[in-house]
Length: 231
Ligand SMILES: [Mn+2]
Image 1 (cartoon, rainbow, N blue to C red):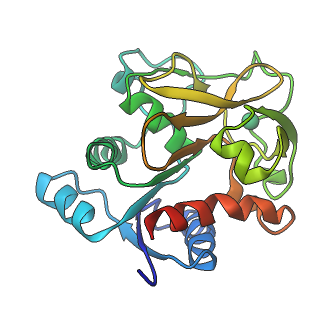
Image 2: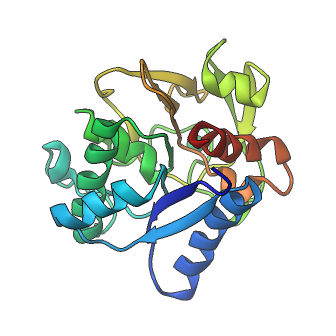
């Protein structure tokens, strides 16, 4: 397959969201893939069509997922949700997991994966953090360390048992979903990467490699690994 087609849920139409979206699609293109943006249509026919067309999927960053989705009431500090996107992405990721297609989940995408497999989130980590985890200003730079689990997929990709990553989040997985394994954690003990056991390719990171590739080119290997898994 020359240019594996990767399905990416649309982030939005305003200039900031278009810019965010471009960062992901550019990394996929550089890895030798092509992107298919998927609009928020949760109908069974649309989900089936996306699954048929795309060989792999990337679930990108975005707003907080409504806590109702993981059985909680919204607490102070939880950001405004985008319910149509929640609905669509949950339906899509369930279908992708059932079909065992390769997937890379970033930021919100990692939280979505955790919820889809039965996990929950801490709705706001502001008062538990030692490092600043919501730092959009320094998005292109590594700002906090993470420990990587030896022999995990992420440690093999980054060729180390430690890394320093950027951070654009204020929520984090709390209880961990079925079959997921924490393969990176921050100094506070926040899960920063998840991998799915006994699955062809499923990597989730809480940081944003799409902003890091310029100064930390090894982060491009995450996108490359997704594309390679689709070939
Ligand atoms: Mn972080």
